[in-house]
Image 1 (tube, helix red, strand yellow):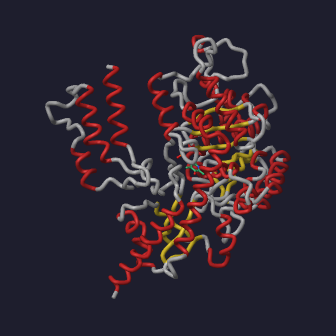
Image 2 (cartoon, rainbow, N blue to C red):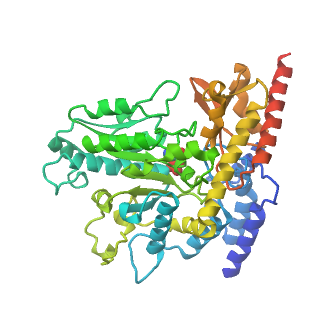
Image 3 (cartoon, rainbow, N blue to C red):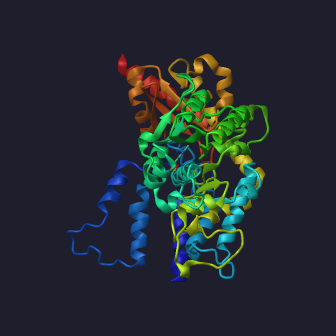
Length: 507
Ligand SMILES: *Cc1c(COP(=O)(O)O)cnc(C)c1O
């Protein structure tokens, strides 16, 4: 069996390898997808679930299934969604995770080092992102991603804003439930105040019993809808019998822009939250990695937008996006471990207790899962391998590449327009661009099919979005393979060809 795995790993790497300077296709092609689909088991056939054995199955996976995958990890120009890719050291670490299959559930210091490695990775991340000392972030854990972390954030926020209004400090929502706790606390409504919060925030609100309708958008203005109107927040916080969670989009997913504009905004929000017993959750899935950028003029707007975010009560960070570790990896930080414990405690299972008195919490008491993957190891490996400087350079490469793409779009003459409304503020546009670029074609007919035209070219891949009620194209650079020169040339050549072909078809 050993030689089977060794041989298989060699074949996997041969199949997934990308030669230096080359780009894997962004999409697999419909023929490959049809082939993969036709190879899936057919319940009407006699050999269904007949057990093919490992050799045959490996051949099936590599020859039939793998060609049906997209180029998320291998292309370097897969700029759809915000996907990230996987650094080689992260892939290696992920293979170690599978090879040793540690169950990171209970902190067992005399039996496995895994929980301590997780904690070391979390502490390194806090320091990498300049969020403060680990003692200020006692509640910390790995999740499945930013959605998971947003669920934790709203669950902790819910716990805190309700229990702070309960007469008895021994009661918690986790213990007596949302309905009873709200009645006892005299709360009629819990609202989540945000500006262009990520869609997963609505999902999280539903999961933790607040409801999707609890999300209230408080945009600063029509021109800057991603920015939070703090005056409006203050008015909302004053409503009687209403408890609030303030959810800050630190990196809005369409524009990459930030809900707060600097440390003063965050200080004011902190003050308001303390006064009105509200909770501040920062969704920094990809945006907070701008904190690792070098202190250069060209990044000063991004540093400023990030300033003060550490004043929050809880924070979401994605691992599988900009940090370039495999799915599923997210990170969650909050001030007190006891808040997480109030929500996620897995009580009365003596066989699950570790009997330890160290600072390290058993993951099963501070997160959604009991048994789970050792998802910290790839993060640990990336931080060990790259260090502050390596991460900073990787993030810089992504930002420079996004800005090169914006320049390429601008250089195509009058056919395309950068959003949001770059026309009036071209100078600041570049400085505010993090890793997301939004644009559209000026010609409505072309704009409608633009995403399709780009993606069918199979050189670069983008997501369709909408802005001001019209279709828009979203480019998100989040791979360690980011290459600004190649990106500029590819985008310019491709967009010029697309608009030329469109003109030709019109005449
Ligand atoms: C991607 C993203 C999410 C959701 O993250 P998943 O890792 O896909 O669960 C949440 N918030 C923001 C700001 C994001 O960019």
